[in-house]
Length: 339
Ligand code: ATP
Ligand code: MG
Ligand code: FE
Image 1 (cartoon, rainbow, N blue to C red):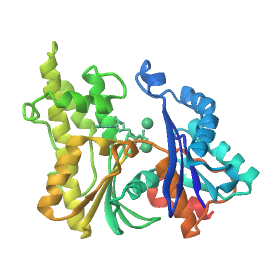
Image 2 (image 1 turned 60 degrees about the vertical axis):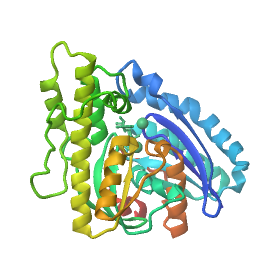
Image 3 (image 1 turned 120 degrees about the horizontal axis):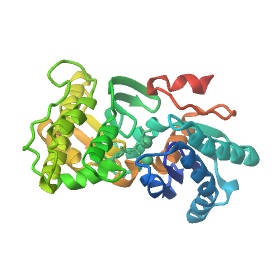
């Protein structure tokens, strides 16, 4: 039976229904971008309150789109973490309430596991095992994935996440929030070879990342009275440095793991230059490349419903109690669930 998925970890209120045989039955999303834009970033308290005011209608609408009565569901999945605690609590309480009222299993989903499994919603989906590059607003991870729930962390960012580096650099260039997609747009008008920014931590072994220095490099290179062309060239050169760095680390991790499949997910996975570069690398090195559609790179309900369904199919359910956590390392995924 279909699983309802609810996502409220940050600034997207999202909901979807997934079922194994029929796939994704419906999904809806409300982005809070305009709510937070004037503050230049997500304001946690505003985020929680907005989730509260939207979630009920979103769930009702998604079930209507799917042509389902709540009684026809087979379980309720929600994002339990990592994320903003107040925002998480909104989805968790609604999910727990629905599960209790309907007598359905409640499935606590790890937000990064859901990002990682998002390509499973596409026609061209990866078989296990694969390497996953998870690049989002809060995380930069290289993960060896041997199956659902079998994750080995190979590398991570020691400071800023990739999406965070995009957003902070965009801010330096005077671009509106959220900066990542804006910076990518500006970069299309720029010369990516004008500024020779570092490819951090590629000259030494290992799979960890560091992106905070790149933002400083952009700040240092930024002329006092930068022209539009200067800014576009800075954006393009920054994007080249980030995507080169990610491509180098992916290539290294594939060699190290021996995997022949690479999955790229999380918000920065929507970046077209990154997709293009990894596509060329895949051709040259002979590995298969998988992405979620662009809309499922950033936060969405479909990936939560899918992960809930995959977990239920495995028989590995969450406990009945509500569970939320702002910090939840992917490698510790099993612990909170079996407790
Ligand atoms: P996390 O998943 O780590 O908790 P999050 O949910 O906030 O963080 P996502 O929604 O997965 O992150 O992704 C949002 C991030 O992706 C933002 O930092 C945004 O700037 C970045 N992003 C989105 N589109 C693009 C793009 N085209 N190019 C670069 N960055 C992008
Ligand atoms: Mg978001
Ligand atoms: Fe996310």
